[in-house]
Image (cartoon, rainbow, N blue to C red; front, top):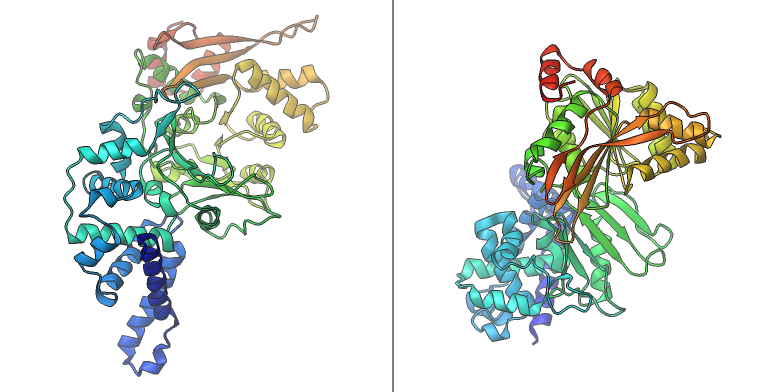
Length: 530
């Protein structure tokens, strides 16, 4: 029997055993009350674990894998000799590339836990570009890379190790997320599947690590049905609805707060999923994020912008670290201020980091729009409003209005490339939403509201940095309809280091001073003298 079918056979037998436990009629067994209650609780726990194990609940996954190991040893009599027939541990030449990767990841996981995959990349310099790619060197890990690493590692596995690896293989095919199951649990920025290749090519798994997108060509879903199975299971946490031909995409979160997006035909050309993880950035301080030479310059400027309660946009392309920086800057907001956050899906999870603060987060649902969520915030005693992303005209319009009346100050993220583009986008949103009819008046409202643009960039090597911190300085309204504002760059990133190239305007200084304590004012003017 081929090994692939052998594992499929085991998956079927494991499923039969677990289904037998769930279907068993306990009242026919004439058990004592205590024993009946114990078995009933066991069934309930198993049903809950099977429901949650593939959606980011690591406890449920461990529980199901433990049951799988018990069934393998106690019911199916899988000895070490039989394991070697299923996975040829004793003959490396017969091991597939996926087998070798599973063994490598298991060995590294024993020592480095969820940092295992990142440690492999670092130890063997796999975050460097390849030289044999037609497009000039994209990041890629192929079968040869895994073979070479495996040949360098001293592999010594006992029976328990082999049983763990086999149970993981069975689990990922039974209730797990296929070939990406263990990788999804690793500490990385994100992972996606179904996002490359022609029809019939299922080597379409990409990882996002340290700002770099890496094609994991050595992994293969094998079939469209397997990719579909993973996509139809990965988004199920908290019952977000059914991914169907009519509802072609779903944005949700997983049990561990990862964001997951799934899409399917006919809305998308194939089944795809995108998992964005945030466990790598939860406790980052500004000092940990801003590490280039003279990093104290942007850190100091950002600190006083936030302490001075200035309306600030954090801008940049996707993956450049906007959310990460925004999370870190919250520490500079006065502890007594209440925070109200509006997001498309829960990403910031600020209460996990700032446990002692008054923080409430709202997200859009199928029945409650972002606009309604923002309207509700006005009735929840919020002092500071934070928008995970300003991406629609109604939200942009409400941001401007809210910043003038409903909150002390606001912070938000946006994808604008320049300050001019940010102002133009916000102006156009005010016009589109009907809040203003005159283009000049709408732009004047924007530049009177948004005070700072903190723009982030990411280079080809995945290095993230703050390209500039810009103050938007309104001009006196020109009679000839001239320019309504100037852009004053306080900090710029030049030749690999940060440079201070401007000072706060007088009006901003005066406004910031109102929100500082006497001690903070003294410190502020010591660093930024008039």
